[in-house]
Length: 185
Image 1 (cartoon, rainbow, N blue to C red):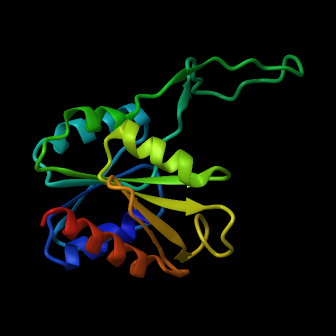
Image 2: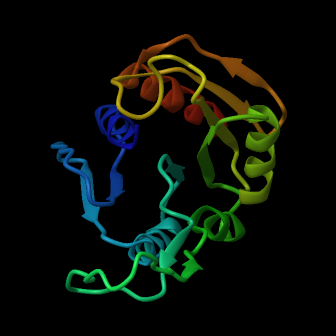
């Protein structure tokens, strides 16, 4: 969704900073500055660097919640049948941006839930200071990862709920941009 949103925003006249992890997707528009990162910490640092000068942030994909404490540059040879990994939490980028968000900025988040979808999405929106959240459901056929389509529900900070039918990701991106524009009125 992030690449579709960036493309639609740029076509609508916005200057876009797209912070992307290791993906094979490409995007070409003169109004899009793509910054590639390889770790959650790098994504955090870049997001913190650019956020204060942005009108809006759309956080469409989450990095992993945890990262290994120890990493290896070479293959780990089999010594036993068990391996214990110690993990540490990654920075919560959305929560940290939400803490420094100014009154004239808008933050949009995403939630992919498997159960208690509305409850968890509302909780996430409040905790991270989102103006609205885009709820994806793994229950919906043809939606989410691995598809060119998505089916979403918007929940805003006033409690309004807006359901959408299955659409192309570009059409969903347009819906998100239209909702975003309303936040500035």
